Length: 82
Image (cartoon, rainbow, N blue to C red; front, side, top):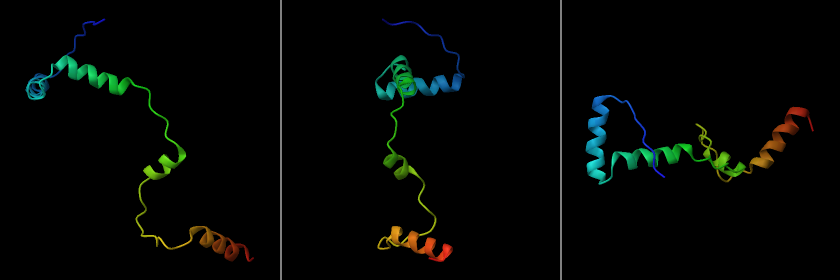
């Protein structure tokens, strides 16, 4: 069931949206409804791996051949004198 919604926006934005809707061959109502669907949809929880992959890349280059686990243990051994 459809319902009416009144929006108040700047005239220049309305003008741009009318042009955009003509180019897209869609009504402004359809565009707004689709946008509301996107922002109102529940967010998908990211897995731990996805979160790690989405972190910004470090500013330094890390040698891909380097065994990071081994380097970690070497650093700990050096720090604690093992």
